[in-house]
Image (cartoon, rainbow, N blue to C red):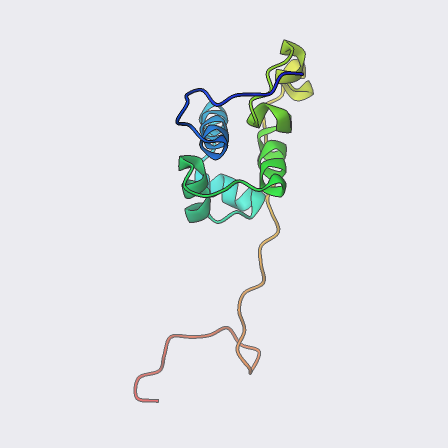
Length: 122
């Protein structure tokens, strides 16, 4: 197995992963908000990761690969063999689907109610 190299001498691994993720998102017509809902990675942080400004952690790469329905190695640049770059869903003719990520519970104050807008004068 060959070690994947960044496409240019100045591109970091994080930038290369971000570029590959962005391309796959584009191909599947997924927005950053779709990815946020599916992976739990906040849209602002995801945007920075796609640009290569923030580090990609293994659990994030695995979550993104699951949503994009591609092998984790493909995001790291592993292109050994064409069979590994085509997923079983693509071979069967299925489109990638976004699986909703469970939403975090809303914040509650000490009374058990959702925080409201500050009351004037109180």
